[in-house]
Image 1 (cartoon, rainbow, N blue to C red):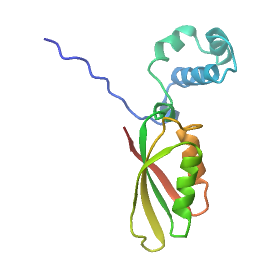
Image 2 (cartoon, rainbow, N blue to C red):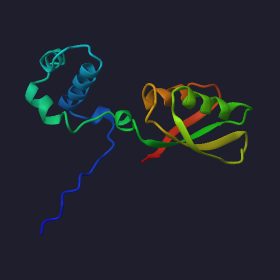
Image 3 (tube, helix red, strand yellow):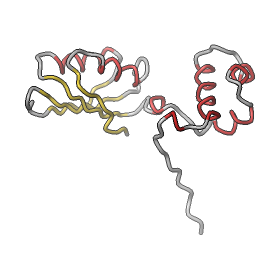
Length: 149
């Protein structure tokens, strides 16, 4: 009896991907945004063959798109200033992220670390947008994704 095939997934930095895969992702993006009406228009605009698009379209996704509708855990390093954690939580809540857990370490040498888990099912905008908004806050040192479920 043959074992069922298990798919393996890898997180790969964009700059090492072949052009056909990058263009496929872009075609999917412009179709989703409604910049063009048909696949033919999209592949023509990106100078990609239809066969290459159909070959890769079901196998490549932007990382943050896959995170939609999931539980995401992030870690944030920030300066130990009053109101920092509240600002981060407000940013997530303002985008309809549903906060599930918060774990904050005791601040050391003026730096506080916190882990936050939240659901992205009702998230307005992308997870990437939320994380970039947090990263741009004054006093934020680092924001990283720990994992997702």
